[in-house]
Length: 344
Ligand SMILES: [Zn+2]
Ligand SMILES: [Zn+2]
Image (tube, rainbow, N blue to C red; front, side, top):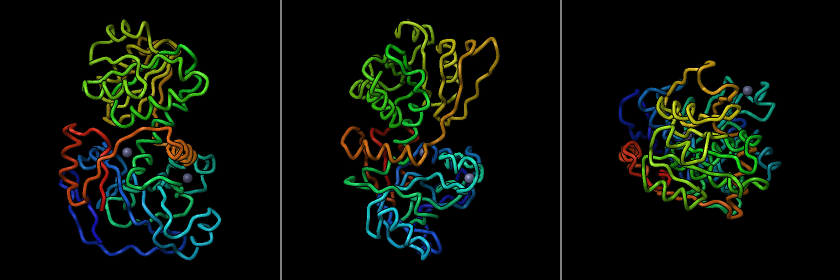
């Protein structure tokens, strides 16, 4: 079968002919319907992402159909009410299953996790192996090609909003920095919050006017085309209670620290590798800083439920697997509207 593999950092991906993976034990083989292309994939190719084992088939945003199961996986699938042929989305936080993080429902934080596209072969391929049926979530009525981005672009902002919930009270000022696929999901989750959603002030800071336009269609009140921190504060009427940084470079983090309120929250989501000095001088006293890394299996279930009920809007642009290198170039140049998904 064909798989797009990275053999060495800073080299183009190669379309290799690799043996069909055979599921053993608890493993399940997925026929890939589509695999989303994430900015993190670009960082992996550039060699700036840590904990990557080469050579590897990229891809951590996968949906498709159950194709075959190892002997131990079969009864587990039945208990999960899943069967060969069912449409599923793949949860990518493949942890050890036994440590405190895994047992506590945050398997994506497992210190020894082996995630698809990072340490295990991922979904830039016709088929992929998933180590255990617990990583599969049934897609209900959703089409795998359309659903694939939910596995990462969908759940990461969901988790960010969930982690910010103590700050998300009526009247809170929320600033999103960068509004690609993840930011657009975040705006929708914020508006869907039952108590405060309608009463949040949602501002988006972007370099791309077209993205600002789309942000306003999914719930943003204010669009900021770049600008310095003083301009941001003026336009949103004060300091921000919550800043979600979906870019994560030195400039965006500095902006976040300069506009967040004392006791406010900065969530770093984007993995552009930025750093932020931390001390009493800055960020503001008693503000809170946290990263958001992917989502949990429960986050994925929640997001699939919302999507299946028609509560979320998102766009995908299917691209043939053969065109993976050109697709990466397009994402790098920013010439992408919806999420690019590779279709084998
Ligand atoms: Zn990703
Ligand atoms: Zn673990």
